[in-house]
Amino acid sequence: MFKSLHTILLIAVVVLTMPLLLRSQSMHQEVFQQPYDDPRQVTAMCLECHDTAAEEIMQNIHWTWVKTIQDIPGHENAQKVGKKNLFNNFCINVKSNWPRCTSCHIGYGWKDESFDFEDENNVDCLVCHDNTATYKKTPTGAGMPADTVNLQYVAQNVGNPTRENCGKCHFFGGGGENVKHGDLDLGLIKPERDYDVHMGSGMVCQDCHITEAHQIKGQSMAVYASSGDRILCTDCHGNEPHNSELINGHGEKVSCQTCHIPQFAKDQPTKMYWDWSTAGKDSSAPKDQYGKMTYHKKKGSFKWGKNVEPEYYWYDGTSQRYLLGDTFKPDEVVSLNHPNGQLRDDQSKLVPFKVHRGKQIYDDQNNYLIVPKLYGGFWKHYDWAKAAEEGMESVDLEYSGSYAFVETEMFWKVNHMVSPKEQALKCNDCHGMDSRMDWKALGYQGDQMYPKNRE
Image 1 (spheres, rainbow, N blue to C red):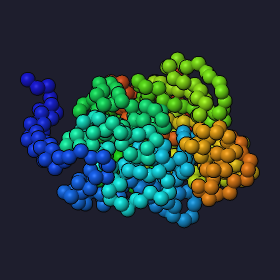
Image 2 (cartoon, rainbow, N blue to C red):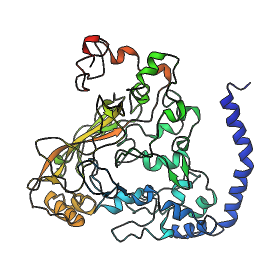
Image 3 (tube, helix red, strand yellow):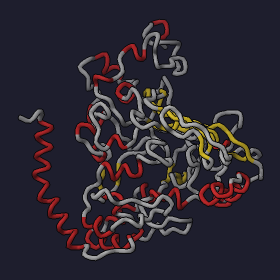
Image 4 (tube, rainbow, N blue to C red):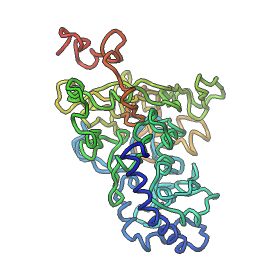
């Protein structure tokens, strides 16, 4: 006997779609009958049948890496922002570092500013649709596939995107597995339920990131968070998913993730601190308790975390954003994308975050962040002044010739690695002597368990 209706439905879907999948595979084997030495040739063949696919992709931020935003706090005019031009405190900025940073772009050949975003043959169909698990891009190849990839074999065996397809880029941002997000790693490919209750129950990325005409629902705070195109737990679970009226009441001010993701980086450690100011030295450092490097000449010093408790902030679904040329006070921490929200705002809820902190280079005369040329620059000559001059030329912003390093922070909303309800936070995890909440920092007088502390 099958254990659940979900299992029966899953098997029914597989049985009903199997003939279609086999037919699709057979058709692609008939179409792609010759070897290919240029992946653009594969794309051209794809577009003969899927004639609107490239046009759809070109409207996708996975392709543009930038979009126009109207309401960035502190900036009156609309701004074109995205991974293409924004700062982070990992590898800092794509500008002047294209061949390395663009290795995970869904296109072919973005090696400099001259890349043609209008050429449909530059679209990489295979990176999302490969079902052989053999397709991979070259780390410094500006989006080109590795020479070892058999393009014909991959093209003959394409299908709907899998967790592996999404994970090839999203699990490895920042230079390694789980470096950036903290809640995205290879453990999500075939997890048990206690690792991620959704993926462990047979769901795939597109169950939440609903996709129509190659437009994928969702947005990352790493770029910019606005009120639209958001994925909410309540989209599926509703506003009152619990049997307890008390717990449902918490949902008015507490996000689902707060209770249901008690920790992230459950298996692979995630980077928590990155100090660029120490880079360039011929020295070494011992690995940490997780076996992770704590120093690299090219990148500086690191701190890692595993089974990390999130930090909690009020969040209304939008965020601040540091932009090129924004000035700051060097004696204060520069927040690159601080979440907006406050206690007495009806739109704000308590949300868990990974906060990545570090030190990065800035112009200490103009008091704004520097875009350094790392790939082919600092990583070659280890001269910060030269790297700063080369990088700032690429963004057409004045460099005074003097630099220093400033503390920065970057927020990553925790959404994955959802634990089963049995492992969700209990009352005394947030209330009482061992509370993980900093109640005063959240705007309260103290622990909300006690009437005298309530607002």
